[in-house]
Structures are given as C-alpha cells and as structure tokens.
Image (cartoon, rainbow, N blue to C red):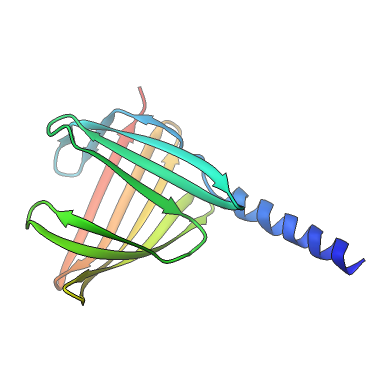
Length: 154
C-alpha cells in the first residue's frame, strides 16, 4: 500500500511539474528588441526526458549567418557554459539554474570572468498567443542590464 501511495504521489508531482512548463515551441521569424529589429529567427523546440522538460532555443542570425543554440533544463540543475561576449570580445562562464513557473521558464545566472563573479541576471521566457517574450534583467560589472526581445510567428 505504501508503494502505491508513493507511486501516485510521484505521478502527481511529475504531472504538476510538467503542467507548470509552458508550450513555447514554434518558429518566430519576426523579432525586435527595445533598440532595433533583429534580423534572424528563433526556433524553439521542447521535449520531456527523464521527467524533466528541456527547451532548445535556436537563433539563426540573417546578418552574420551565425547559428546559436541554447539548451535549457528546467529542474533547477546547475548548468555551466562558456560564451563569447561579442561587444567586448571576451569569454565568460555562465552558471545558471532554470525552472518552470506557471506559464514561464525562469533562469537565474551568475557570470564569471577569470574566476571572478562579474554579473548576475534573471531571464524570463514566456508566450502569449503567437508572441514569444524574453526578458533579461540584472547587472554586469556593477551596471544595470535590461533587455527585452519580442518575437512573433507568421
């Protein structure tokens, strides 16, 4: 009987967890930030693996032909990646934890350069109808950082 109760509780927690994860999947070819139109396309794929929702976000830059893919694991596990900051030309390490909240994927990250923490930020990605929103807020080198990207499907 205890095993049955444990199995039911596990199934309920899995379904509740998966239920919090939004459906972001799609192609978003019309994007803009608060500064300018973005020439490129975001493609979002999502899948469930070992009871964890994953999101693959592909960005294809029409100007530079750069293809970039970010993978988001939503169970709060620490993910570490190295990324080149194009405006300053340095590589940084980004450590992040991501999770699903009702209707959104939220990531908290710390940025390191040469082993020293130089920034923190929070990203919230969500969809309303055919519009994908990505809001980034934080600080880098003691300066506030805020970026809004809005993408629509055709």
